[in-house]
Amino acid sequence: VSIPSGLGNEEVLAAKILSYLPKDITEKDNLGSLFARFGTGEPMIAVLTPLDEYGWFVSGITPDGYLRLDRSSQPHPNFDSYLLGHPVVISTKKGLLYGVVSQPAMHLLTRERREELRNFSLDMAYVDIGVRSEEEAKNKGIEFLDPVTLWPDLSVLANDKWAGPSLGQKSAAALVLSMAEDLGKAKLSQEIVLSWMAQTKFPARSGGARSSLGAIRVRRTLQPKRIIVLDGLPADRGEKSPVLGKGPVLILPKEGGLKLKEAVEAIAAESQISLQSQTGAESTLLNAFAGEEALCLALPVRFAQTPSEVVDLKDVQSLRTIILQLLQSGRVK
Image 1 (tube, rainbow, N blue to C red):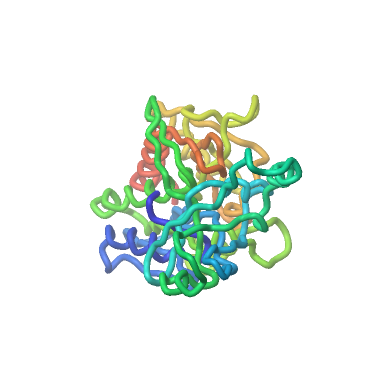
Image 2 (tube, rainbow, N blue to C red):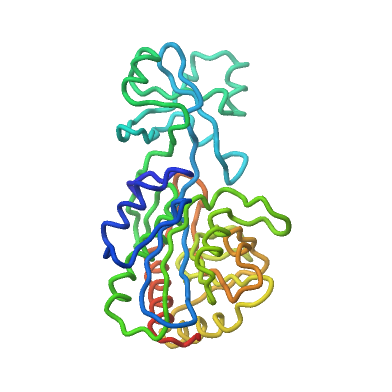
């Protein structure tokens, strides 16, 4: 969680993951996605999860040293409003810099100005990094297109729940890494590839269902026979919504995935793990594998795509147990 991985700036987090893995089993593609291979034989099963998180980039520097921002992608129209008055991290070639998005004193504003702030936009965002001039900002290492992400504040809540920005997908990325040691020791009957996908927030330029650029590239690179996508999914949003703490969420593509579904459900039942399902859920990651034997197992995330995403560690552990047993058992060939 503490390592920024803004869209197009995933290499620092990728390097951290690589530091835990044997060098002879890892590789990267030219987009920045990371792969770790275990076992031999066919068919290949790939477990995929995003490496990147939503954020912004430096689009300008004012004469008095404030940074201006623009977005590379956003999950919803109100995402920019989370910036106002919040600390941010700027990833530069010289290292990480920290700033805060200026928040005017509301009691000093005119009524008209207060009304404007109700509809906050990036035109109103000024990042203060503690300098007094454009030259000083550049001397600190600031350059145009430097990625900007929310401050990685992790809060430990009651009853095994954690909260923080991008926590759903960061938890999935950590979960996949945690399985590497087990897979390295196991006797596997087929090849298994763990992958952390870069640039998944960019849509691919193709017809049909909206698909992730990073996932499309991974499909072409690996050409896997079976695909398990790990992601986060909004929870606690009404009667038909997944519920936090009630287990992972099973999402099937429009076609295929039945053999994997049966295996996942059998393992969940044997392990006495509750499993939720979601019908009609749209996944740009899963769409990239249309026509393949694929499914998505998602972590329920309360307050998804906000600075305070909440995950339940019991859901994380349950998801890890299901996937690890599926990979080690060789049930799906």
